[in-house]
Image (tube, rainbow, N blue to C red; front, top):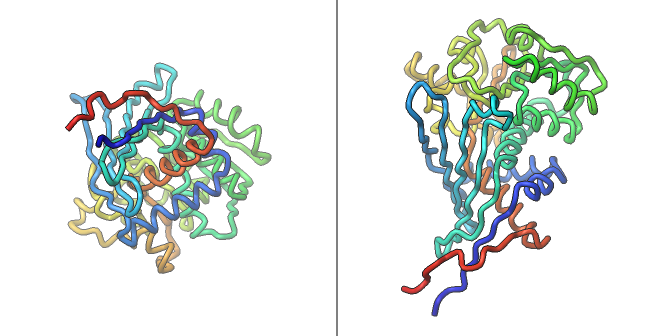
Length: 336
């Protein structure tokens, strides 16, 4: 007897609305993803990079993952920085969910917001652990695209407050747009747009990096405040000199020491990775002790299990809401 198999699509408008319904809940789902990974209840192999001929910065990345007792899946995310000149976002993505019994794919979800929000939520989750009072004098955002937009929104929806916001983008017009469209409707304090990344970074107690940088461009360790909390989401902004002078936390040591991230370059220069204090799992479960008196840098490589956890949750809700568009006869031949 042929198994009854179906394949459904969940569109981006539903995915976005579903996740934005409760950003604190997204942070809790991300927490659960980290705990599953740290406890060995989810399998998260290395990401795979499809590059294009040099000097193009374009790439497409595959992030597979599997959850014990849940689905397997993969995020397929393209990063094409030249899209910004076309007036569309740099990144596009889908998540495919696979049945753990048959292996057949049963859903495809548009995943650009899943990817951006899981990144933002991981940063806010780490910030909660480091500063449970949820306050800072000044927030700096380096890069004013989609991820930092969601980072800022997630901070606010999780009851954080900032007296000042400092912005830097290589394109000043984008920083101005961010201030006008993102900050002005929500932020009541001062907003500063900087002409140089160094001045913006130096002004922040909490600093979020979400850029398209392919190599470090900040080198002076003094650019960061001694007690700064740095959310290094783009992974390649800080030179080894800064990394070595900071307390460093990541999501997976194995994953982050690859692909020429700032931590990878630091490990190559030093010949060890003793400069990494631990992982966010250590922070969540063991109260990881940091030295203090110097910046704390969180550099999450980005685990596919987080995308899988969010996508699985959205899909289940979409089924309940009748928002899955099932494709008749998607599997063309099911004879043995």
